[in-house]
Length: 341
Ligand SMILES: Nc1nc2c(ncn2[C@@H]2O[C@H](COP(=O)(O)OP(=O)(O)O)[C@@H](O)[C@H]2O)c(=O)[nH]1
Ligand SMILES: [Mg+2]
Image (cartoon, rainbow, N blue to C red; front, side, top):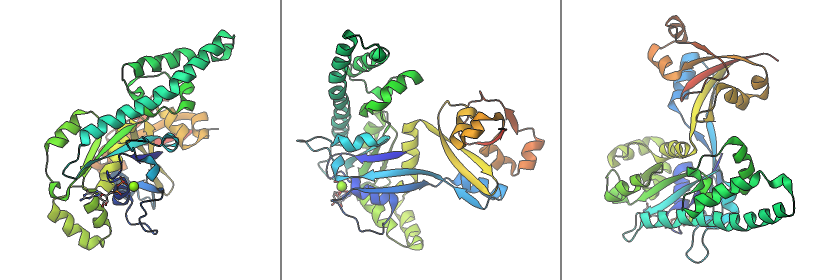
């Protein structure tokens, strides 16, 4: 999964990048693109690994992209070639400078994403209709899907708000529509606003996207400190959780994904799965053989394991369930897939 930081120039994207990934071996360069792979530290995986005595822990990973090309400038707008590669966006909004207009910036950029989709869709649809007139039947099924998108966009509805069938999704995939990609927000607040709740945040909450607020400059500097020193600063400043930790949760929420876990041999591992998918889909993510030869899954919730303290007690209490392939995987499930090939 690749997430691109987008936003107006000077909103704090590059500062945010380093506030999330920490100081990098190469110095912070505001002219260059940077990409980093992030581990999604999940305390639940730590606890699970402890209880089942796993020696190895594999967290979820995610790529974060920061590029000067992703600036939305008033004259040029966003550079969209590079954003199309991303699976989702995090929009960084300036709320730190005295003249900041975060809500306005949010509105401008979200309508710009929508407009770019119209620019792609309109000529495509025209060409498609010409092709159909010429009798090119193979594109017949694509037409209603694109018309559905056109209807939404004409009503200013971003495509991420529309539900599509798996068949429709297949047709849409090559277009990489921008208003369809998951979006989360970062409100980059001023040093003096750390730990405060303000009007801006109330307004941000109303726009209905997963968001976090933090001071990018301060958190970037905090990560440059020694761990021991950092802790006291965090407490003094009244920061509850560093953006490094909260960011991924907001981004994941935008993607509508859940986490599930597996324990195989020595390794406890976290996985992501689209909300609403079943255990057969989950098996397919782990290994195609597991999906092909799927028999049953032994399932328990990690929270219940933490409550009961051991697998033994869970089993005694009948909290280890056997589920068939239709079972919808829940947040925090631990899956043990039984399969035969
Ligand atoms: N005071 C303050 N300055 C910030 C904050 N975030 C970014 N800046 C400053 O704003 C300028 C632009 O930040 P940068 O991260 O390069 O923005 P980008 O153009 O979106 O990548 C830099 O000089 C930063 O130090 C913040 O939270 N507080
Ligand atoms: Mg930058």
